Image (cartoon, rainbow, N blue to C red; front, side, top):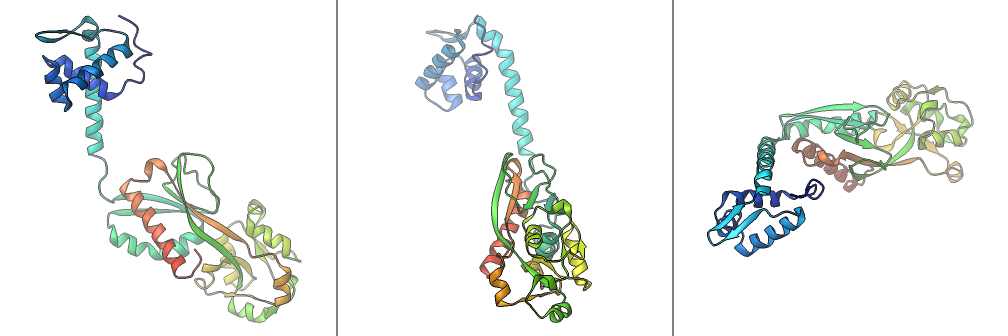
Length: 308
């Protein structure tokens, strides 16, 4: 018998099933009936299998087929494969069918508070067995390594077996408390702003770069947490670039900009927002439910003439 290890490395499961049925059948027609194909198909596939393995597996005669010594050697291994496939099918049948269990969602803290938290009652009422873990931070969580199930990101991932969907554009606006916005009046110079902005750790992000390029004085407060910046702004300490959809949510007001100053500035910072999950998780019911819900909410925001 030839060494079939390399030849059978890519042997399809259908060929193993064919082999097993021929071992158990008395004739090609019986094997064909068991496999749901015609006899000529069985004969053709058997010839191709024997050629692939470089061994004669069955003797054909008037009384039917009989296994050769080579087939007898292969039969126990084929039966092990059959048992493994049966276990696999059983495990697949027991997989999750209902929307239940925990889904971890990583997102910026502001997105967790403004975009996701207000919609959770609707989502959880629709799926009472669903549980949500919000991993709210400004850092990037590694979806490819399955540290989280779904992530909202402002940077599109370039590597990993991931599913990525664009949700829209996040635009930023200069905001302060209504009292401070009223005190500042219509801005004619950026040096008049008591800036609240990002620290050195996130100095590279677009909003931080915009402030660095325009602010004519040192910021009064720096923080790498957007939520901390918003808390400082809400305390009346200063003004900050804040996602535009969050301004009203926190009871803040846009700072008015004079036409001359607006003409001299570069456009407000803006980010693309992406929804990301691992390809293996995309169709798991609990993950799919949260994914589809977030996509629908983003679409509703866009149709309502609001930015995500």
